Image 1 (tube, rainbow, N blue to C red):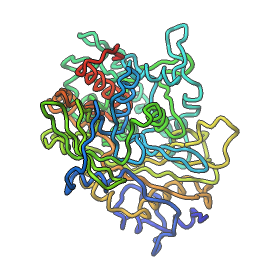
Image 2 (cartoon, rainbow, N blue to C red):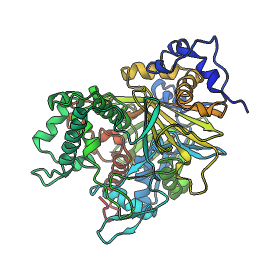
Image 3 (cartoon, rainbow, N blue to C red):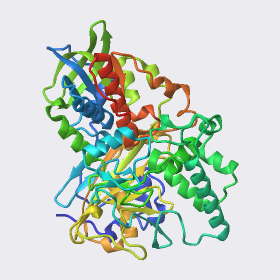
Image 4 (cartoon, rainbow, N blue to C red):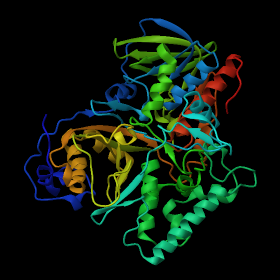
Length: 545
């Protein structure tokens, strides 16, 4: 198997990166080379060619008509959550259609001889008080195995993220934790304390309506006017207004916004920016507060468990391209990509668990997509025949490079229960947030595999020279519309509020409807849509919301 060395990649130089049109990694550049060396790998990703047929059209008329009681369109976490809720309630007459080869949406995952690994979402924080639907799921899946004497959940110890969890690379060494600590001035340390005290106050605040200031799911948050007004300004503007001047604090907050939203702090709603720090109040009887659960394949573990529970209700490589309501229910036209034929599906109701830009095309109502903006991401899975090391903090689950355009990498084998592994897979994340989303998306979809490999491996091998000769392969996934962007005015604005309205026999479910793309939001919307659909159909159930 071909291996790429640090020496070869340092020889690529800044010229190779500039030619790719990619920014922010110049600090790792060396002298230029004419052509990059070959690296084993594949450019994988969501089925954009199939999905783009929804935009281009040109489908033949249906060749047959089928029927179902309820149809779920979309196999991401919202669609899987809707299907799981229906199955748990004994509502069996449904199908779930997904255009991919496997359901999961942005919780997709992969596996090779070394480890399973995520292609997108890779953790869930300890559950908040309000996340009732997800709590019921975690109990079903034995992720929550019981409750302690203080009422806090007991989590499966193999799912709780092992220590150490996070580290930051700066000044040629690693530090524990992601808040910059090396070289920080006393004035900056004072700002740190003031900022985290403010976040703790937000976390503990109960609004005049009796709701927590910031909750997950977000629609259970307080509607106090001074809180919702934070949605009108950016996180950067809020920091300036509150007198925060520390560049290190600004970097850390910008990192948080890019991590959860794929968007810079200067474009993120201050309400969303504060939510990142103030909403998570989860506790565990067997873990520290602010902990999380994760698996080698990230949230792909949850997708696999949910899909397995649905069995043959899940139909893959099925692209619904037209949906309309009629007096007797819903009609969907579907292209079976595997068989290359179109069929018509008649149902009493449908749940559209699709991003709103897709829902707008399905229904022929472009207004549904107005105001919805999406962040593009690129994810690389790098298979190594040796483990990373480095001066300073011990190898962590999450490893971040200070002031890099890339977001950092997580270690797929960090949760391994056996002896220290000799090989691993690193999942490297990059939200392309330095460009307007449409420009970033267009450029990303046009890039060659070699361009992406040059970016990810150049940084990795500059930070980890000990991996010289140990890169086995580098596979890359481009997410054109990875997640909704919570720009100012979106979360508590009229467009998102309208998206929450349900219009039977069509129901909608997606994290877009929250403005924040996290598992708890997607799954809750799926459960809510399923319960609304069952109520519409007259099927009895006991709510979990």
